Image 1: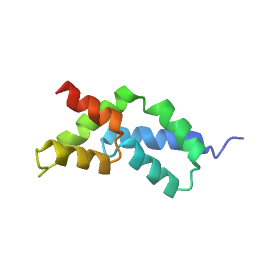
Image 2 (image 1 turned 90 degrees about the vertical axis):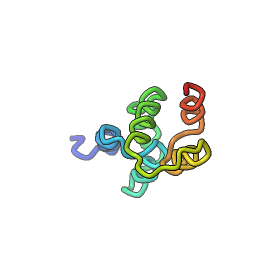
Image 3 (image 1 turned 180 degrees about the vertical axis):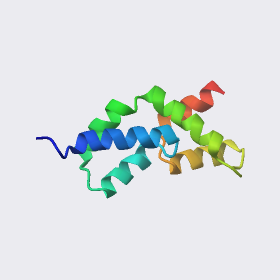
Length: 97
């Protein structure tokens, strides 16, 4: 009957979190894993919901919401890594600046 579908749940949960601009994909993955979703399902959901261009948008949104952040490049990189953003998207952000 497909009443409980981990993939559908993960995709909807990710869309909600992305809309709020809370965290990067690695952090979102860890949070889903803590909810009992298996790694393969998480990877499938992330691929469907969070292509690199959406991750870039999410990164910018997260930086706009960050308060009291040291404006040095190193501090921003460290903050973004802790928030779960990929190195590739962080590098692309600084290359575009």
